[in-house]
Image (cartoon, rainbow, N blue to C red; front, top):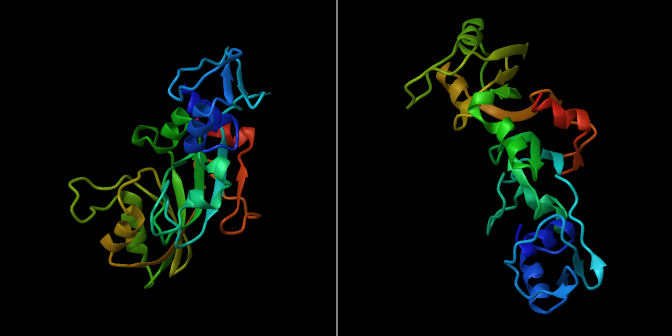
Length: 231
């Protein structure tokens, strides 16, 4: 791992700030001052910043209740992103595992573990995701059956995989899918002649959005929630 990354992982410093303190001679590796931010550092080596030891913690796993109007992106020059809702030192260490559209609310997973996020997002794993869907028009039973069988999306050459549909009322359903095609839920409802008015993701695999989290809030995943993705 590069020294500047090591520092940003183990302190509140951003990568840019880490490079500056290394250049300033404030960092020692194995007792010797190091001014090379790109130096490779191994876990067994000793790193000190201003005389204090730096020990990068383990991987991070978070859930967030994403509000509407927030991008699922690392940075954006003109619009707020999900990472803007995290403390700076934490935001620099995680990435988003499974994005949501700007106007979609609900469960967002963030982690520093690349293999874990791959298990969430890889089409081969078919990690199922559940959405609450508010519809513009009443949905007939035959449309629900079509969604459960698989529908052809505009511009696609293969039908969607079978979905699970739970009807709350004729304009409110839960839809569970095992794919992640572009704007898939909205396009699936369009394929059966309807339109999505609002969309909220409440489950990924067996991880459910904590109902104690207000929009914009986050918490660490439990060990059981973390294991559920790879079991």
